[in-house]
Image (cartoon, rainbow, N blue to C red; front, side, top):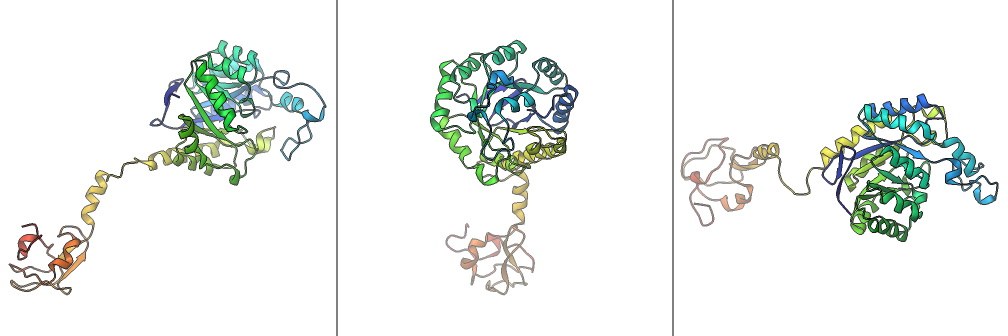
Length: 357
């Protein structure tokens, strides 16, 4: 897979700033003005992109009371059906061109997750800059193929994926001529318990599939997203709402704007803190190195007097001879008077093999 590509005007690569996505999802609560406010809040909080979801209840599932369509298993949506949930959660399609236009106006990328071919066509008509494959769609091979053929970057969540699912999804993209693909480490639990997120697999995904890796994070707070930067993620996606107390299908595990802003701040701090894999001193550290320990005369030493533990010590700063010579210098004689506080140097001490003279 390509290790560098662009979404809008943002470069996605191992050396570029982490790309941060605010997922609106259902947090608009079927209020267009609220959707616009979320979009602006995302921009103000430092997000690079706002992500939508493009489906209707009829394009993602079917209206049925059959037990297999009823949500169970201890989720926050238990008791309802898939169809009823998606009726409440979907983003009206007529909003999406307007939201994208407003996002572009304020300098925010806007793209979506399609859930069927009509959604892909709709996104193509808006020239959206990327396509996000949701976790439960990773095995929808015709959908992935259709997205890949657009030539736009493909972002694939792995929340429920087996290794075979991931390999087939990636192969589908490359067979369609698209190598601008990245994986998102994800757990499809809402919210995700911290012990389930398993950040250590991020470098494994990057190595195994030779691609960039990001994080779609459904844990509470920003600790996990911020910490993931140290493991190499190049993209972070988090749900955003205006206030969790406002409710909605996704509100309980979404970030409020101030929390999102704090997360962005911490991610940018982590990027600075990572530095380089090469062990080198900064210019400041090189200067500070002069403050390290070295050998000094700590008492006045007369010409011909031997160096002893009483008149020579390893102390700060680092202006004198290296401390590695301490044992060799013991018993050696001064060739001139040495005042207390003088950094020891070779020209002050009688020569001997290995002394550097």
